[in-house]
Amino acid sequence: MNLSSTEVSVVAPDRSAKTILVVEDEPDMSIFLSNLLSANGFCPICAATLADGLKKAVDACPDLVIINAMLPGEAGIRLYQNLRTSSRLCHIPVVMLSTLDSSTFYRCPGAKRSPAGRHIPEPEAYLQKPPEADELLAVVNRLCTTCSTSLGDES
Image 1 (cartoon, rainbow, N blue to C red):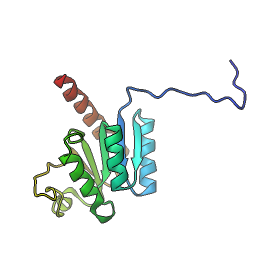
Image 2 (image 1 turned 120 degrees about the vertical axis):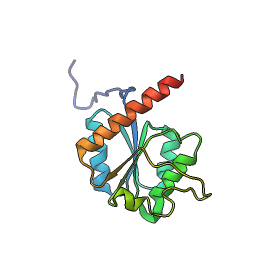
Image 3 (image 1 turned 90 degrees about the horizontal axis):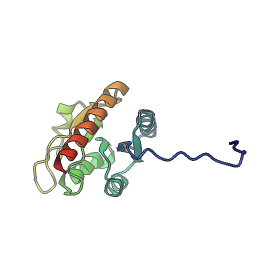
Image 4 (image 1 turned 120 degrees about the horizontal axis):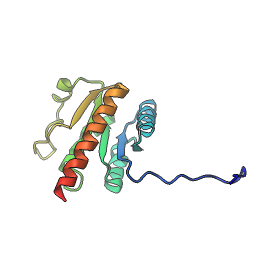
């Protein structure tokens, strides 16, 4: 079959691909993460703000969330708090990205406590920016496999 210049070939999305929500306000980093994930068989969804990230998390219920911990106005920390305190979203593994090392980040107010004072567990992974592609993919693959296995055990 020959396609004319006006016809478009549409490829159905891979339903088995894991959905990864990337909440990153730096355009270059967002593009890098999205392209890296897409090229490795994942289905990235991008957001740049706390509100957009939370809406997309609720709408898509992704398999994993990658958050820039240093979003303006502590929005990265607040998004993480929202995910961990939501009964619908608390099971989703989170990878935090930051230019700060993890020990410095965890000393930030709010990194381990919700606004109500409730303890919040550490994210499943914490990587310094810019992340090495191989390291990020290893973490994403590990967390997506672990998540799939544990969800499968519950059924």
